[in-house]
Image (cartoon, rainbow, N blue to C red; front, side, top):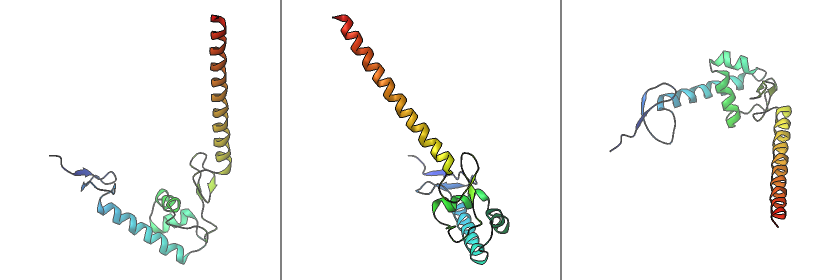
Length: 134
């Protein structure tokens, strides 16, 4: 018989295992943070991410998570931007800035080309080997 309990990864409290990764206390804390952010944004359209964080006492990382999850829309808040996950450039959507996204696509395409060249070379080597055996 196994116990269906675990420690909350955020606060360490004992909790029942379930579909949520956090304990009810931490989930409620996150919801409270979310509501404080929404309320502040309604009253302060021109604030920046740092101002929002300082005023609500919600970490920038948590606010960024709300934005990326689509829970907070920054469409009506032109002063809010957050950092690209790779280079730290301010962005307003997604996880990467345009430059990092383009570099990622270029690197992926280069990897595909390298793979195709290796496959072609391997095929040529097998063909040459079979010709030599005759």
